[in-house]
Length: 346
Image (cartoon, rainbow, N blue to C red; front, side):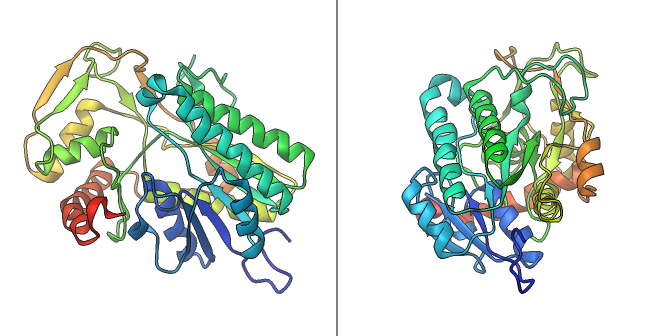
């Protein structure tokens, strides 16, 4: 029966980290599709106001197994979407224990609670960072997993734990490996609000609306069309849709699990992104050319054939200018939103 009751109704989905960027968009997608949603978030980086009003909210830590197991039972949770964790690669190099604690150890506690409460479906927010430096491009799901940062290693450990748990217990799973997430809800309901974000489109949009003086470009001598790094960007609403489709696939085939890339199969360089932001915003952005950063790749592009075939997923917001336009619209109203909700909006 999975996440559907005997009467055919949809059981609640627990969204960990549902007050964060991707998690809050997933909540909207679930609610739009008719799923009851319960959010668990400790609000360390998330925002209480980012949780849709239709969702139940519990402030707490995903690593607190006692609290999580009680939550799963009390709310009759039928599936878990796990977004909670730390996500900044350079920070993981400086503070690796934080990443093994917040990501790996907390996920262990969550999985333990899920098994105890007999939750049948688990969807995990993973990353292309688990591939490390790929041998070929685009990267498919069979590529070697050789992460080069504690962030990537912490996520790969979780993937391995999930697979082992599913082999021993009646649970199936979908691991979604994100490439570069960007944009905001096209209806303007939510967007990226993280303070001190490091993602290129977020940084460039902040510069376009006057919140930054410039954008640093790290490396202009890569073997790419214009010498700058090339990345596969995916609109956050398309990514949220992939999560809903993953849930539906797990319910439809409870004996099958999936590991899937989330990207568009094409990339844009740093200069192409900055050109798009300037074009959409109608402003010039100062570009400061800096040396390459240690660990940065020349290019990272997804082979997305598997997610298209297995989930019937097709992007609706794949145009770079549209992604940028949604991000700019959100950024322009963000300060007023934060002011209305008090310090840091939490």
